[in-house]
Image (tube, rainbow, N blue to C red; front, side):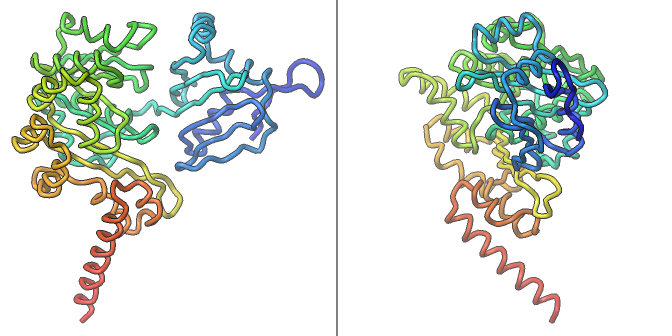
Length: 379
């Protein structure tokens, strides 16, 4: 890869950000990490790989980010010391960028956002997700750790609605990642910093914009959660994300944000408005040719709603286990099938499991069942 452009005096070079990002996409990588004192690092199929390039200098970093940040964004960076933004390379992809200061130097991480939005089927999302997209009102949460594909899944769900329904969709994002073109629906996408000051401020005024569906990029604080719940109570379908790893933890996180004297009220509200939680995580495939998602799915029926209202979220796991006919599944159940089907390594799956001991026993039982099944077919 020739990713340098000579400038200034002989022997002095800077790296070109567009060339680095093109190389990242061509390698089917997901992230580019830039740090002074280290060569550029790419994440490919979940694993970090150092590029065969010289360590970055402060001059390199300044030049790389100068092509990405506007004057206004540099001022915001100087004031806030970190910044989220989006950057595009024509004909290649969009990138979610976080620029920051670390140990007296600039740093940045670029995440690939393809121009083409994958469909629900392309991503292998659970089929019941399409039913969530057809709901008239309520809250649907997509959760998971950073880099687990939440934004990609939400984009696929919004695209499904855009294709199948005539709705007015308002999104509030930080930053705008996937760009949606109007199909059957009308979509307005608002970006923090450029179009609104905060998720909460945007939600305060969203009712006047007559939306049917609202997407909130992240439920970050009490005010945003409260306003999102209120929007669902008033007849809107609200999609949002949280950085939680399973369904019960998601509900607890939303409730725990509130002071103790308000938690009973928010339990009642969530018991009425929460429709579903989809938790996901990504694992490298065994063959090394990409990653695959594992999912936990909670569908809020009457029993689940009662547990939320009564503060017994720890009992939700048993309802998920018995809710397969409604499309529910536990994360460990999904992970075990990936292991049994020889798609992912056992060690990768158990590292993502909610309960490693139970997961190990589950895989053992399923392997035994599979062995008996094969033996029966051979005799």
